[in-house]
Amino acid sequence: MCRNRRLASSGVKEPAREYSVSVQYLGRVRMVVKGAFTGNLYGFSPTQSVQKVDHRDAFYLLESGLFGIEL
Image 1 (cartoon, rainbow, N blue to C red):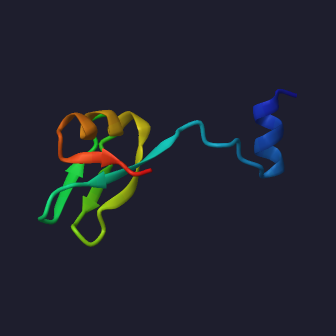
Image 2 (image 1 turned 45 degrees about the vertical axis):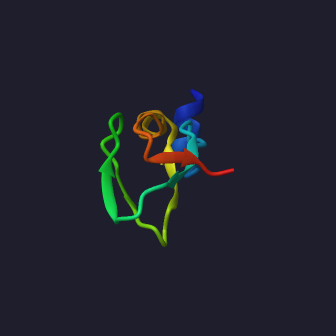
């Protein structure tokens, strides 16, 4: 039996292959952005400025200049 069928029959899910990046919004007004790659919606505000974002969307957010990487 192949590995995927074994995992499915046992109820165990494979680990997620996607990675996330903690991105910090640098603006002063509330905004919602749509991920250019995934289409996910991400909401940011000055009080909730840090959020985990799919790594494929993070590139485009960082390019805008409104976001930075949270360390």
